[in-house]
Length: 393
Image 1: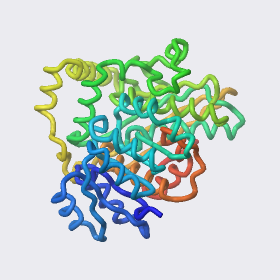
Image 2: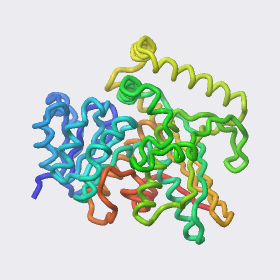
Image 3: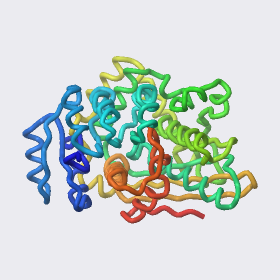
Image 4: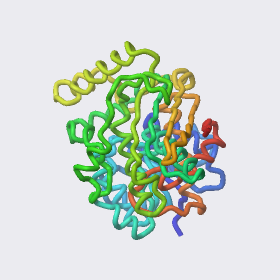
């Protein structure tokens, strides 16, 4: 019997502190602990919480410490980014000790590494390793899942899903910036340009790349009701949704052989869209060169820093997914959640995911899997019960 149901690793970071406070409200009878590498910061966080929690001092780069941590709990929820620097040993330990795992990474190169190293064993053992449980990429993944399910209920397969995001957010937090820089430093443009980057290896073919080629056009989309612009998170989210479709297809619950997914930022005018595209292109150029990354690092927040609580509370995120079925039916799924997407929404999504992993109601497969594959409708309902508006028509 493991002593803990859940350990929150990276608890003293900007996002981790918020997750700890939310868990203190919702963990109920679960036995849980906070973990990180700084004993003083852990003690200070524990003193803030309205419940008593144990503290585990452990460095993500210490394989022995990570093994001990993973062996002590049924579930790990991690906010310790950049994950490519601090979480290899933790995930390896979770796979070794059959400990379920969820995190908030958006680092697709690191997730690709996890798939190659651990998917087969985790799948065989029934261990759920679920990265991307924050705003990267829960809204995208579950939005597509909801549309495909609604079309399946009509007796149709899903031909395509297109999504448009709108949001208001405060400054990016330092951990998110550090993770973005880590992606650029390790993989350059490859992680952003391969549309099937997270597909199972046999499906990473030229034909699949052509079929799923990212749509970067600026145009008015009548179904979505917006002018589309390139979305900074699309190179992450689209890969996750496409992996979900591939994994579900392999298990006999796929969206359909024609399924494609595209994602955009939704704006009112072409002028706004062109301005966003130019700004995103400039940022991308900076991230591809060392001096540019140094400039972004110098101007951005440090790890542990982030927006004010007022900015977090005043933000919002909204997403519209429109899908077309094999019989011509159209289905729309709309999400809205009050609060900064990269901070409040991400915390909500991670905590809900972790609590579901602690339960005994999931029947999903093991492996390095996605939120839609791991949780499906159970995460949709848990989020609805905690303030996320999700309507399907």
